[in-house]
Image (cartoon, rainbow, N blue to C red):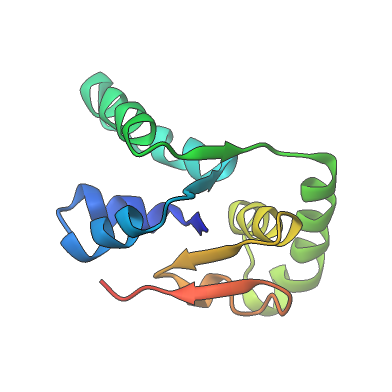
Length: 125
């Protein structure tokens, strides 16, 4: 399962429900886009280290940005940016999940529901 950035933010905010969701999945994945968003959101070096340690401690695998993911993300932006406000970051995350045939779990379902081939699991904090 690929975890959207928001799930890890919920954990950082103390959500036990989000933490349990992550803990029960033995195969934990992030898109490289999710990882960059988490690092970019760090307020200082201590928080930056916390993010890196969290990813390491919970043994997340980071899925790389590939040519196929880039191509699929571009198609999503072309198809959905005007009608549904699909942003590049969300397109990359969705494309990563689809290209790797994985479920994406997110509490921001509205960002992804337009992508028909995406296996999407909704999380409510």
